[in-house]
Length: 188
Image (cartoon, rainbow, N blue to C red; front, top):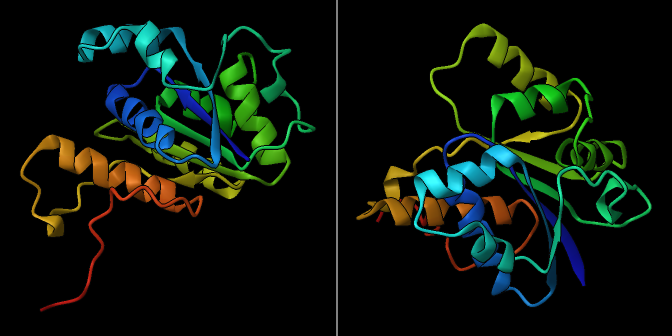
């Protein structure tokens, strides 16, 4: 069984993390480990109709962000990697600078040091030069930067279709088929 860490930090866009957890529940071969910042939990209440407890129930395992002794804090705990969706600029900064003062950032740091896949979904706009430098630095140390950019070729009819497509593309990075991606077939 593959193990995948899902992190959610305090940026707007918690719907990406929630939808990611929903999609992963449909893939039998994946066990999920969820860690959320306190700000992510606030944003769940602000941006969605979800209760934090219901979001936690989507994961196979939930770890407190202050539990730096959790399994996902160690490189000996084997995972496929981690997706942080959404990824706040604060979390991006901590990851890029190896400032692992929480389980969320420690788990990301472990994924990088073990040369596993770390996918960051930054949800901020506009970006200033400092943000761009952090994105560059995170990329240079091995993170994949995957901001939620809408794919207009799918001719979306709803925000949910845009979210689903992006979540599917995130799972593509781990060779996990979700059925959420409307794949480009070329011009017809």
